[in-house]
Amino acid sequence: MRKKTKIILGSFSVLVFLFFYIPLFVVMAFSFNDSSVGTVWTGFTTQWYESLFSNRQILSAVQNSLYIAVVTTIISTILGTLAAIALYRYNFPGKRFLNVIFYIPVAMPEIVVGISLLALYAMVGMTLGLNTVFPGHVVMATSFVMLVVMARLHGFDPAMEEAAKDLGANKWQTFWRVTFPLIFPGVLAASLLAFTISLDEFVVAFFTTGPGSNTLPVLIYSMVRRGVSPEINALSTILLIFIVIVVLIVGRVLIQIQSRGGDRS
Amino acid sequence: MDETMVEIKQVTKSFDEGTAVNNLNLTIRAKEFITILGPSGCGKTTTLRMIAGFETPTSGEIWLSDKEVGRLEPYQRDVNTVFQSYSLFPHMTVFQNVAFGLKMKKMKKDQIATKVKEALALVQLESFADRSPKQLSGGQQQRVAIARAIVNDPKVLLLDEPLGALDLKLRKQMQLELKQLQQRLGITFVYVTHDQEEALTMSDRIVVMNKGEIEQLGTPQEIYEHPRTPFVASFIGEANVLSGSVQEVLVDHMIVSVGDMDVIANHNPDVKKGDEILFSIRPENVQFYESKATPFTVSTTLREIIYAGAIIKFICETPSGQRLIVQASGDRFSAVKEGDEMIIGWEAKHAIVLSA
Image 1 (cartoon, chains in turn cyan, yellow):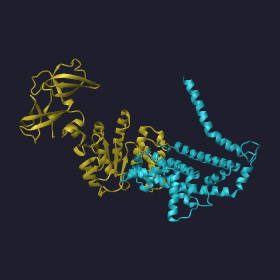
Image 2 (cartoon, one colour):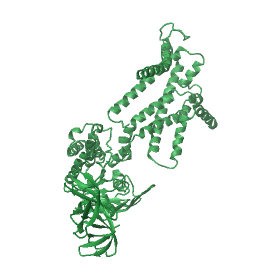
Image 3 (tube, helix red, strand yellow):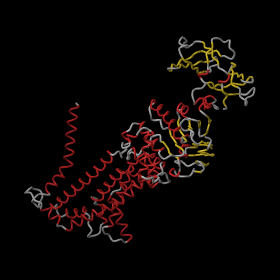
Image 4 (cartoon, one colour):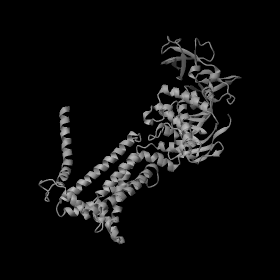
């Protein structure tokens, strides 16, 4: 019985992983396919990578997306962390309400965010450009950051801060020398989440970018409408590898922090 | 010895749930080991936290030496705390933990190193400086917490049930060490505990608190031998608390009738004939007598025998249903059994009149 369970569970897991990763491997394989149709393998080539790097449209979209993602990450990590600390530590009237307000963007359909922002921009007469993407992304990412940091704070012993103050640290020193180092793993994980949310966000970006300032997902969408070009396979492969590398680095940092004894959870 | 170190003046602390500390007045002398003792919820920890600065009094003043500190932040006060949960910083080594307070004072690096070494030597942990707190046992962590506090040369060291998480044997050992440490350093210790034995062992003076107020303040001996209230009598050690009316007041003792029996109690200048009083007798001060011939003895029925190692406790019931605990040592009473008639009595000086 136990053995049977093991076999069933094992093969089920393998199927799930295949389901997840086969499409990715197909994309990676076909990015080296020497055929512009893309459904049959005709030979190995790196020409799609070459044409990708000479495609100014794509390069500028990559630049745009990275710019949006980095700035969004910085703003939302700071805002979300501060909000989490405030909501965790202080009791004030309207706290519950504020809590809910912060959770709403997580559940809010992106299409609603996109349309509302578009309506708002039209109302105040703002011209759409690249920077008009920020509000939507920051709002969504901030909520996620707050959720992750809140989870981290729940394992945080308030007596740590009392101990620091007792030993002569003022509020500023207490935060930077005790509170922040202890919640740092949570903040790091949250910022990674914010980065990936912003980098591959499509709907809000689609509604709020102006002409000529595409983000990568928006550009890919417009390219795909004209048929899947092998260039897109190459682009996806690069994106995939980039994200994996970032996750690995962050993972390593987190493990180092934990082995140093910084983790309390 | 009589110099005042901490003075709590008419301090009240109210929370949403109610009043934790009610109009407290307490003077703590320099270099004394004072213990605030009481059951959970009596306000002892709140009192300590107000001295530390983690709570602000709703009203009243707290003086530290010659400065009113009641509304100052913890980092503006010359006191340090040893926390119940140790609260060592997990992202720092033992050395960094102990150095933290000195670093905040912007002390020079080599001076910090010397002082930290001294403090760690004081708690016998010199060789653990580079360890992470996580790698230490509970007792060692507690020692680091003590070193981290005393390295700052505080005027007052506050200890919030610091031994609560340790096992009995280690706790006994740490009690002695703490007491020795306090005598060596000459720092005022304010120690909070609910463990009456701990309080009796370590303290110069004990403050017994109940429901946010002080029940009694005195040396361990005074508290144990002359409890002032029924609460103190039964919270510290065991006590038989009896109520009766005073029949006669004599020079050195009184005769009190409890139910249908007449017994003796210690003389008390505030009591006069006809008063209804409460008085307490410790189980070890109740004796068995051979016969009813001795005056003021009571005939009881033995209801229960509780064996507790070095001593044996006997629960005796009077004809009117009053139960008394009698404590005896040795095997003089190995032959008695439940249901036997036992004659009990006590000396007048051991029956202490309580104020209700």
